Length: 380
Ligand SMILES: [Zn+2]
Image 1 (cartoon, rainbow, N blue to C red):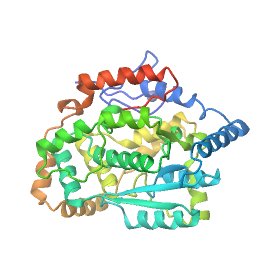
Image 2 (image 1 turned 30 degrees about the horizontal axis):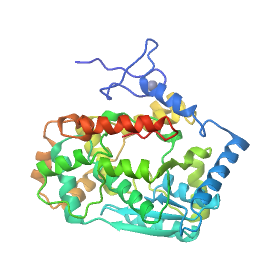
Image 3 (image 1 turned 135 degrees about the vertical axis):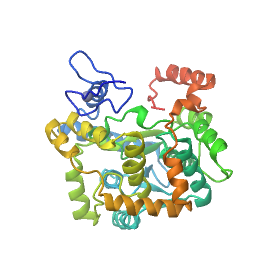
Image 4 (image 1 turned 90 degrees about the horizontal axis):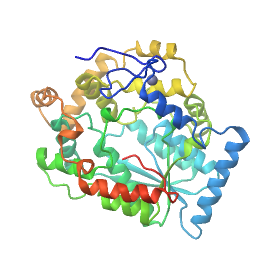
């Protein structure tokens, strides 16, 4: 058994089974975060950064001449994506907002989306997922017993973003992902977001329904979106000095946005997944990654982060309520839920995926080759 160890610079520890420490006790995540934090445009400041975002806006407008919209943004109702919508409007772009209704939105999330987009004057397209299909797929992931239960939602969101970009002939998808609060996330905690083969194989093995309308993309389709259609994901928040607390104040004041009291608590499943499944079953506490990212971005000290970790992630009473809600929504018995939760832990590599195939390796080689001609690298 491996000994417990925590990084001396951030608060990542051996709960990431793949963590590596150097001779000074600094972890691999710190090093990756350092590289990201020193990359442009994030590393720029003041006027230089402002100039860069204006250049980006001009380029996007130029590429979308004559089109109804000039970019796509994904909205969840959360602070990051709402602030991205606010910023995109501020730099003079006309986006189409895309939302995935996977059946788990909190009421407040829906209100936040509708209210803020109305004030910003942004059109909204909502894809409502077929609940019976999705319920079956989410249960399949729980039965597969990997920590990747959020992969179906994340995959579907990317699929509809690409789909809408293609439909409107748009090359830019501007996302609320950002280096300042998300530079660290261990692959072992969640993997396979773009891997349809993984999702499909899990559904085939554990599911009872056929996926007829679930939005997905194969590896070849992804290759086509990126290389042929030249659709790019851009983390727009990296083009500004993004400090979440300050952003929230602006959203509350100018758009009437209301806080949920926790990261990703706009979705009832996401919060339950993080508190109950990820933490209880696998021992992965996403707060460690999030707070470590803030330490690396200089927005929090290591001591403050350690203090924050002493707090309870989720009140026990609320967790009990949410567990009941999840069981009812999945329409399974409590015994069945407990049986699934007690299944032995598995990992991504226990199932078929693109990553383990020759096909994937061949396409990645072509992609890397094209990368030499200025294509962006994508994290699969
Ligand atoms: Zn570290």
